[in-house]
Image (cartoon, rainbow, N blue to C red; front, top):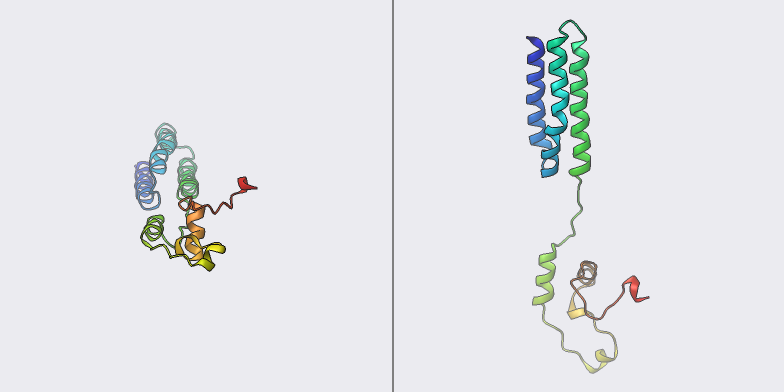
Length: 141
């Protein structure tokens, strides 16, 4: 039957699209469970109402699949902007860089944290990895 073929093709398309588009465990868990009731309704309508509006049931299935893929993709497959350097590299840089020897003049002024660059100190401070008495948090007042 043509209706069964349409449903199988729709199922194959949904599986391929979910493998390509959906990568998180949450998406892979939710997609089949949310799409199954629509498949059951489509097959039920196609078999028990063969002279009805089966094209409407199939188009509702296609639309729901596309909607579900887009919702899961936008919600769980969000793009994350990573820092320029990974936190592990920043920790290694902070631990391996030698501490500069303070001069008497520099002792009177505030020394930069272990000779790190300004961007590295800012990233380490944001991640809470650099706690050298430089307290710029909002709690410090």
